[in-house]
Length: 249
Ligand code: G3P
Ligand code: MG
Image 1 (cartoon, helix red, strand yellow):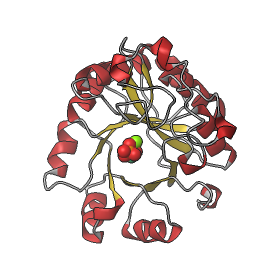
Image 2 (cartoon, protein in one colour):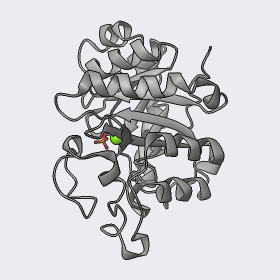
Image 3 (cartoon, helix red, strand yellow):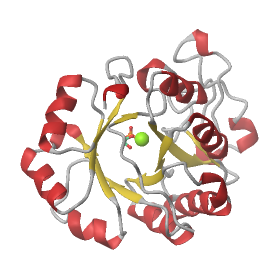
Image 4 (spheres, protein in one colour):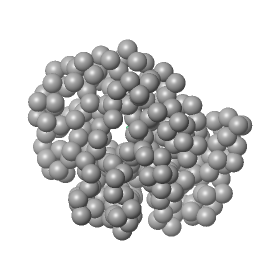
């Protein structure tokens, strides 16, 4: 089985719908598609019973009407929570989607998906394995859907590689570490993802010369994106789906 390579759309909708919709929800995913985005990024964590679903924080308070830790809450309970009202009452009733539901939606909408493996502390390997296995189990379903794993956790990425060896991976960092090349080689990564705010033009040139696409988060001003593209950055993650026109690529 061979996986499609990440096609590196230049504009990636951050946490599905960016700032326009509740983060990490199917409502956001649909909005990104309607606005012409061809790639989305979202965060995946495990429920207490080991099911991968979309959420950014280890706790439920900021984005849902629930409370407590995601890793201590069973999937059935997580799926009952309201994950939309805190963003805007127009989104009341929006749910936390499972990874499976999200990938089904990406396939239906023709979206490339950057699956950020976001393990709760202490669940790094378990999360990487569960996400990798889910993809590997249903490999046939994802033909034609460009998928990419990324994570700040090298343990999670290594576990994902063991479970789904052919799926492309990106290492996520804040600032680019001095040993970026060794780390990418160690995990056989396709790409490097880093924070835009620390980035220097010389670093981009060095990474591009080594043949690694570099994607930057979170870029919310079009003029910053243009500067980064001029450096040689391959893609930006943005919350401001209203300010970027991905159809211009
Ligand atoms: O994957 C890029 C970006 O999403 C990483 O930061 O905290 O928004 O998941 P965060
Ligand atoms: Mg993320």
